[in-house]
Length: 378
Image (cartoon, rainbow, N blue to C red; front, side):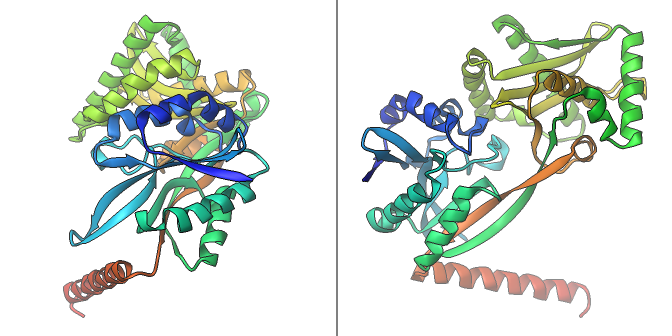
């Protein structure tokens, strides 16, 4: 009834654009990081040393599932070669990392169980010899697809390990701005109200880029504010990465023409004091990146105040969520009403290479404990 086709060439990846997004819109995993535009742009920038291994499941002529995977050679502890399957848009070097949250399999709603079984069978029988481990990064802990895959692979005696768990804070948007303010601590309510009064006194402006020229200007402001703030702290800032910059310069026009991209800025006395890079997609706002400068007025906290305007705008538009994405920061906790977790999962077979890998890992862990105890005088 179902057939699986593996995409290994960029041309075939490009050709599936419309079907990809149609399927995504009808799936439970629909989010900005899984759009064809995000995935294809990432592949254009980060394909070096990687091979496409996108698995598509078809019910006759209908595309019902996509496993957006790639394959690459890695060396554990520099001595054990592994072929690894990963999600597209994951596994970059830390300095280039795009941070694609909520990666997942893309499956027609209601067909998750059947499609995951087909994919598991294909992984274990048709391409079993092509991979040694599978690392699924930044997938929602409560993903239905992940639950099905865990059950199916454990049935086949594969080892399943959650290697990391990261919180994503978000706001479940209420019907009114006042209702949202009441959900915050009294201290945060005071900061927002007092800060807004100070901005009003000084005729501050809140702006959104509305055309290509404004988009380019807003991007340059965002980059400058972000880089200046981080270099002042002695750190490089994300826009210092050429690959990171290339990815976003290619993605932004695609996102803008789809009305997904939202670049917001806050101006005080004609100067930009904060800028936010957001996506509006599937009735949600995804806060992606920011830049800001300090002011001489202690009541004006540019980042928090710009968030407040963006959140109010999202409430007025009737959106469902304002998602801060991964990362545990004080301001995210203070402004959020809920949190969810994303995880990194590693799947492996009980083979000779895997046993060697685990033996070295245990040995390194043991030596680390010995050194720690020696340092404590034990």
